[in-house]
Length: 326
Image (cartoon, rainbow, N blue to C red; front, side, top):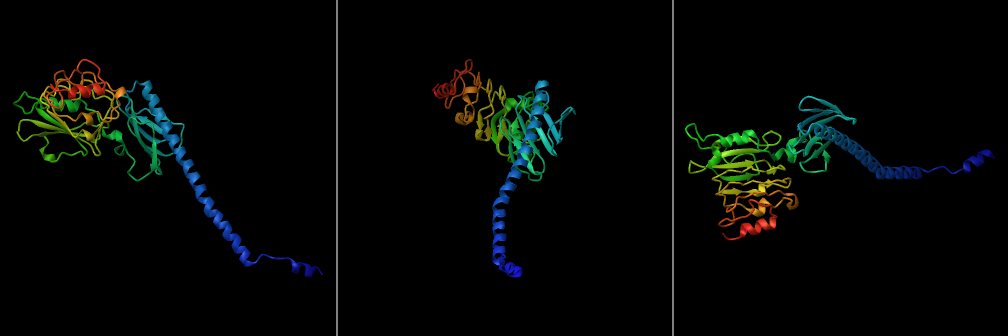
């Protein structure tokens, strides 16, 4: 009797077992990517938190030292400044990279953990995280590496005599300034002098003094791959270029970080050709210092007159003055 009852119990058929397995597989296919995505996102957020921790350490150290330290190397969970002083981070992770600051205190960085790459550009508040590519996460990929900060070598080269028998300086003989979106002049052999004018001092922004066809004057060509990025302070950069007549290709000169253009073209009495729309296209008018950017009785689209030498002008006022006939 008991045997008969056992025989009447219904067992799972092969088709039912396969159906259950198939259902479990479908659920796994749906759920697994979401789980992996959440794990990936968690790892990415942890990496970003560690990078922010490194940046905060560097910023705090700079603040204490009045922004005298401009370069840091990140290794493991430690950060070392340019003097060799090591700062310990509370974060964890095998991090590698660099953090740099402009002389005005704006940071830019490139840090990776061999899976993620974090970058931050000059003047930006956001740190961008992307997939790491071998040799593809360095300051050369960050805008900051294209920041022009003319230093002593730049001005020394411009103040040098044209030749041993001449008192004339290169700066006095420069008639044209042009910006380029590459680092090399059209004919590198023709360059009289080459100067590294990059913030990072890694030759990412190069200036060349190139002889003109007349054999007496020169063109100053400043270039970087992707175009040149200006730092916050451009004051006096082209001051006293007494024979400068034209500035061209300003669309290759990103000035979105610039807040000070005071005396930029001061005492450039022969400057007559410049695209003002390009000059001011990407600047913030409300925060821009244009004090004495041009000399009086100098520079317009045709025959120049401007009254922005001794007063602060809005961009609209400046445009009006520069477009007014002499």
